[in-house]
Structure formats: C-alpha cells, structure tokens
Image (cartoon, rainbow, N blue to C red; front, top):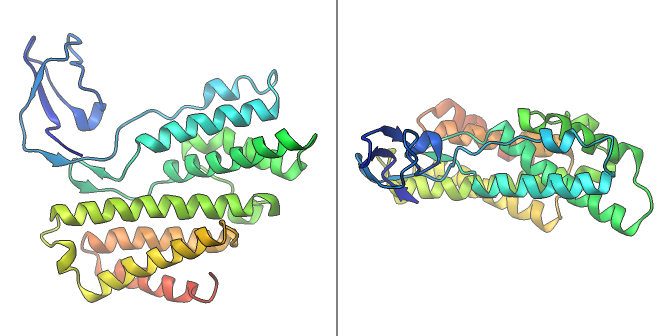
Length: 250
C-alpha cells in the first residue's frame, strides 16, 4: 500500500514515523487525527512484534497439541502483517520471517498429527520445541537437524516465503524506486527472477518435499537476487549460479 508515513498530529503537533511504529495513533496524545508530511510511498512491512514467550511459558502445563495450535495462530498473524518493502526500500528475506513461517508449517503438521494419532515422533516433537524456543529470535535449527517427518514442512515454508518476497519485488520494481521499471529489467535480472519463480512452483507442486539443504540454498539465491536488484552485480551473478545448480535438485 502507498502511505504518507511521516505523520504530524493535528491535536498536539507530535511528529512520528508510521514506518517505524506501524500505528496511526499519535505516540504523544493517542489522537487518531494526523496528517502526512511526505509523499505517498509503497510500504508493505508493518513493524509488528513477534514474541512467543507467552506460549513457551506454558510448556510444562499445556499439551504439545495445544502449544502447536497457539504457535500456528501466532505465526500466521505475524506473517500476515509482514512484508519486504519499508518506506519504499526493498528489504531482505529476513531470518525472523523465515523462522516464523517455518514454525507455522511445522506446528500445523504437529497439530494435525496429534489430532489423528495418539503420539508424535520424538524427533518431530523436539524439532517443533526447538523452533518454538528460538523462532522469535530469528533462529531455526540447521538443515541437518530437520527430521524426515518435517522436511516437507520446511520446504513448503521456504517456497511460500520466497513467493511472497517475489511478489513484493515486483511491486517494488513497479514503483520504479530503482530508476528502472519491471519492463526495463536487464536480461540477467529477468532470468533470475523468472527462474526463482519456477523453482517455487516446483516445490509447491511437490508439497515442499525437498532436501532441507536445497531449501536453504534457494533462500541464499533469493537474498542474492535482492542484493543484485539493489545494484550488486556480483550478487546477481551468484544468484544465477545458485539457481542453475539447483535445476538438477528440484
């Protein structure tokens, strides 16, 4: 959405940035009456908190299934409000977003498994609890610790995260903040963007069932793409190389 992010309260004169607070309420007096003091700028990334502490604090008194339900809902709400354009600038595909979307998918698998079965594989439960412990700090277990039963959840989470990132990349390009529009992308730019989209489609068709290491390499290619579109030609070349090597893996 396009907004005037720099605000001035008409009641008390306080100035603040919606890009930083994510709120239209005046931080000085709480009034909803304000005016924008800058041009309208594309902004998709709300600065929302992501805190799993209330869920973690109930681990000893709550079943794993209930924890998974709560974690899934909390992550869904966080991811829904997040984006990758902040005040017109393209941001990276960050670790906290990736951890939140993975916990959402893992928690969904855990909740469904416990709904239809009396028990859960110990490795799956430990992995879920590891994510619950660290996701709001932007940390995920390494690829070699992903249990077979949750490999597809990680793959699908990565595919969905990259799909949303590509969507914001296209929006950002349409705004022309780089000095070039989507129609003016160089051939390497376009090839990398389109190749990334094809990889995402294949992963989703596979319901995420790819190696966790492959999923991580796709994340790195996406980050290189972001750097490349912001002007780093070396990073763009890395993205292209990574995606070409992944052709044989997905």
